[in-house]
Image (cartoon, rainbow, N blue to C red; front, side):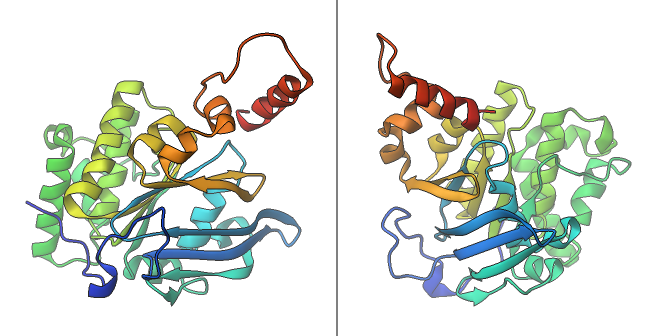
Amino acid sequence: MTLHPAAPDPASSQPSNAGSHTASVPMLAIRNIQVVYGGAIEAVRDVSLEVPSGRIVALLGSNGAGKSTVLKAVSAVLDAEDGKIEKGSILLQGRPIEQASAHGIVGLGLVQVPEGRRLFATLTVEENLVVGAHLQDRRNLAEARDYVFGLFPRLVDKRHQIAGYLSGGEQQMVAIGRALMSRPRLLALDEPSLGLAPLVVSEIFEAIQTLRDRSGLTILLVEQNASRALAIADYAYIMENGRVVLDGTPEALGRNADVREFYLGLSTQQGRTSMRDVKHYKRRKRWLS
C-alpha cells in the first residue's frame, strides 16, 4: 500500500533538478535567515537554501555548525530555547511560514523528526504511531500505519511493545513512522544516524531513500555523517559557524578536495607536511569536533 502525502499544488508536485535551482517554486525555500538565541547569541547568519519537491536535500556540518537551529526555525520550535528569527524568510510552497505556529506548520505538511527521537517512552509502538496521526481520520490512519509497517517490517512484531524498551535503531524507526502518520509533504530529519550501529544506519537510510523513490516524499536531511547523506541526497549544503559555506550536487562535492578530506575522510595528498597541511589539520579538528 502506498502512502499518499497531502496533495501539493500540481505545479509544484513535479520534481525539479535540485542542482539547477530552476524557476519552479521549491517545496521549501529559506532566504537569508538570521537566528539569535537569548537576544545576543547569533547561531545562524544569512542562511539560504532550497528543497525542491520530491528530492532529498542534505544539510551537513559538524556539531554546533547551526544545522539543527535551521530545522528548529523551519519547524517553529525556537521559542522553547529562547531563539528568534531576527530576519529573513521561510517559504513552504511559496507561502511564508516564519511567523506560523509549530502546530500550524504541521498542518501545512512539514513534519520534523527531532534529534534523539523523543518518543513517548511509556506508550507502545502502535500508540506512538497513533499519536502522530491526530490530524487524520480512521481510514487514513489505518493506511498510514500499514505503510509504516511495510517500510519498517521489524516493527510489526513489536507493535505492542513499550517504546522505551526498544533498541535505539527501532526507536528511530518509530520516530520516523510517527512523523509519516501525519502524511507530510516535507519530512525534516535531524541526525537520524546519531548513536546507531552501522547496519541499522544502513537500514534507516535505505528507508529514507525509499520514501523519495516510491512515494515522492520531499526530505530535508540534517546529518554529520556526510558519506551516508551524500550517497542518497540529490543536493547538499555544508554549514560552518552558522553559515552555508558550500553547496552542490553530491558528485560535485565529492570532487572537492576539502570535502573529501574533512568530511569523507579521504586524504588528498601524501608526503611531507607543509604549512597548508597544518592549517588543514586545525580545520579538521574544528569541523570534526
